[in-house]
Image (cartoon, rainbow, N blue to C red; front, side, top):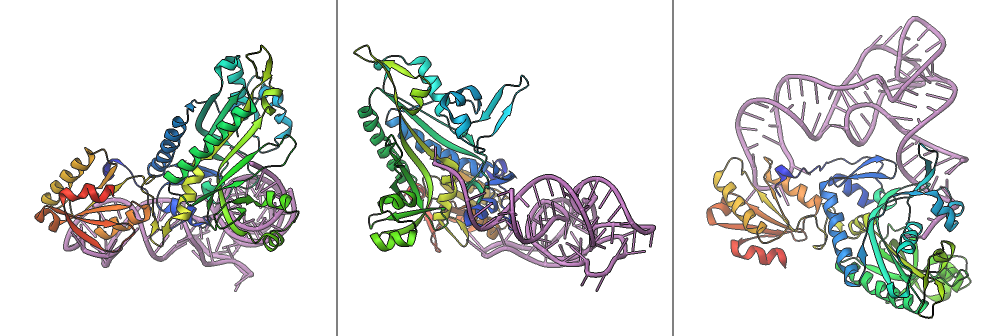
Length: 418
RNA sequence: CGGGGUGUAGCGCAGCUUGGUAGCGCGGCUGGUUUGGGACCAGUAGGUCGUAGGUUCGAAUCCUAUCACCCCGACCA
């Protein structure tokens, strides 16, 4: 990709309303723009990061036998009345009517729709277990959206659902999602932890949350030295204490702030019972399916990753989710044919090696370009000016190191993929 | 929803107390000199002062209503 074909929208100033670092940097780096409270448009640079994250999630879910689908975001009220959540969900569920006066809502989550979908096509134990996921926009009418895409009203979430004949089968699948989630967060190179979020409600529904550890997180976690632990709500119940301080005193656990980026649940038969999602067993008995659901906040991960990895110059993307693996910064290319043709040659070579490379062919000063790419956070730069064109070399610079080094053309690939 | 705050050019802000017809920085555009770490000079465009109403000879400024946005709280897979 060349910058002349890939608009970048960096800016020096930030709107005063952006409070947290990730929000400020996302605006400065030209990743997002606000439409209204809690709603953001994603510009090319930001969308590429989303797509990188989505791809990692896809690969790991496919790996545990989960298939991708896509469901409508506008959902009929009947389904929500069937599950009982039309009354239970509260004002966070945005409701409206169509021209025929039929009631609808904008999907904040998809248990109803998926249960309805599966029950219509699945009737035998032979078809189970079944695992389906989608990556789509969700809408929750939050009382107070804040911190940019961290707590938005409209956001992208991956939601997966599993259906089983027995609790045992659900338990096994639940563990496979745990493992897949660990792989996903490791590939995203996030500093994360999984905590117990067991609600303790009747029915013994089990749940675990995945948190990125960051001071700007909104959730309180209580962790041991190995970073295993639970969220504050569970800790209060478990240790019969009602404040964070008293729990720390009693248990000696560490307190950390977390950004919730994943949550997996054993739903049991809650939805299948209400919505009559039954299958016939080997013994010809009719039973409600056991269900699990598994969410990952894709857009929230973008913000969490930035909270975790930035410096005073801007974002520092982990290689796995950087919008580009490297940038070619040309100096004076519009004036100097040798520079331009050398840069073009390098660009074409790298492009053919399947790397995602952006070539900054703008008529701008070296300092301007470098500041932009440091703000955007591309991990590796390949600098090409008069000197490099003459020597048939390039200058390499890492986002995290101050020094540059002149290297041979054949060594570029090694540097970038390292 | 309760408390607090802000709406003036794309962004950041001044002007409002004491009414007299809107300004600064950044950004944009044109020309020129520049370009190895956010260059400089000259010129130029861009604003129903959130919206509606009121007071007044005259309102960005005073009054009323309303909308939007932000912060704290409550709320929240």
